[in-house]
Length: 196
Image (cartoon, rainbow, N blue to C red; front, side):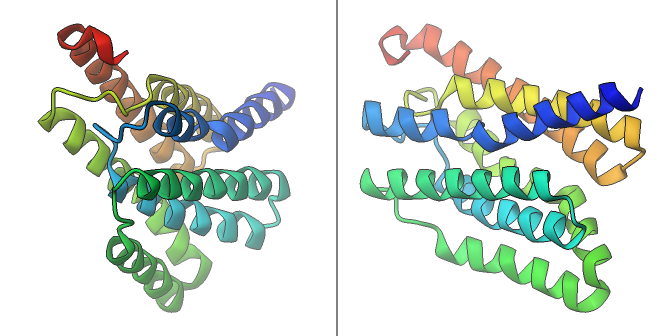
């Protein structure tokens, strides 16, 4: 069982590291930000930065590398969005960072872990909000959200095997968010076939 858990964990780390890359590439290739939340990208920078610090503090070096790469990916999405007219949401990022710093000051690493357990809900909520309020999502990447679903399923399995509530919570939310986004992007592409 330990070998299976290790393989699932390794696969989850790889998917985590590359999940946002298709979104950045789609923005750059299509030149469209329609359906992409700049708040999602900024919150992603902060959340993955917090995950990087958290896993480094716990000595989980492979996870630290994957989280750091994911943070860079979110930064690249913020940059791509800015290049195409979406202002970076620094205020949202600063507010979110303040939550993590406050949690650390109040309860140390355990406080950060508690916030991370619910962080992905906060992070993906703006994307789901934008996607379900618009019918043109030509800037949104199906690949990124499919990878998010896959990432969620892998982390869910890993979290259940390890008995880690924060990882389980992340897995459930990522799976649900990814599924909702893929479904919405596919549904709107039927309304606008030229946007695929």
